[in-house]
Image (cartoon, rainbow, N blue to C red; front, side, top):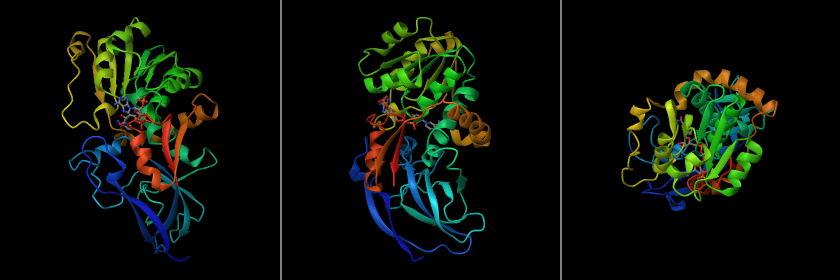
Amino acid sequence: MPELTSREIHLKNRPQGVPTVDDFELVETKVPEPSEGEVRVRNLWMSVDPYMRGRMYDRPSYVPPFQLDQPMDGGAVGVVESSAHPDFAEGDHILNHLGWREAFVSSDVGLTKVDPSLAPPQTYLGTLGMPGLTAWVGMLEIGGLGEGDHVFVSGAAGAVGSVACQIAKIQGCTVVASAGSDEKVAWLTDDVGVDTAYNYKTAGNLMGYLPTVARDGFDLYFDNVGGDHLEAALMHMKNFGRVVLCGMIDQYNATIPPKGPRSMIVAITKRLTLRGFIVSDHMTRYADFRKDMAGWIADGRVKSRETVYEGIEHAPEAFLGLFSGANVGKMLVKL
Ligand code: NDP
């Protein structure tokens, strides 16, 4: 097979504040034949995720920054087009970290075969993948979710949040969910199955609103947003409540340091536990997670939804859409 042409997205500028499409560049490149020990993969789906915003800053973190004028990377699922590797055959579906590009040649580092008969390939970027694992680890292991808990999930209509809500319902919990549109609220109550959902953009003051939907407070808050959501949730935790600090998307584009929650003192008076985590520290739990999740998907207890942009040229828009709430469920790009 001759070398082929592929397109990839480079980071052109380190954005200040909310990124724009001008911070990205679509670049054409050649992908060679695989050498001994390598495979050539054509990506079918790529993921855009909020954590990628953090990688646009040039600063030390748990994951290295993107380099300017270099292809970006991230989760993707592709199919092997040509193989010179004994463990991979043409037609295998491969989960990989070389997203933001249509095709690539690589050795086996970071390549995992996935089974498309178990679930559509893109599910491995969502409910059966990193976001699903985040919800599972966050709820069950970091949050110590218990049967009958009163749970609050922010960012609830997204990839992580919608799975977190469903895990809590499977455990017999009462779930209050917040999201940023009436369409998302309807999906959360009608399909995801939460007990109460509300639109935080029209609910008014969250501190005043939460007691109207959860008079007795929460045992567990799963925070995807930070800011006002965290501040209000802290005030409405029960004594000895647990707060899972999963994400703070409210401040990923901040240009000045955000104000802290003014309600922190209640962490003392209510004897709260606040615990942050990063999913990549918990990859050893993947097999147990997958067993649970595949079962829940098969018996219909976990449903997923996707918002899909088509074509790599639209990947930057898909990414930006995470910050304007353009996605219901997992945001994906079909390549
Ligand atoms: P989502 O699918 O939830 O997409 C992001 C959503 O966040 C948007 O749809 C939007 O929904 C909401 N949002 C965006 N900006 C704001 C804002 N300023 N205030 C309130 N809501 C906002 O993304 P993921 O499910 O992939 O990620 C959810 C969270 O989990 C993120 O904070 C992410 O960083 C975190 N995360 C953490 C991991 C970890 O290891 N700790 C791993 C993976 C994700 P809406 O319309 O409701 O506003």
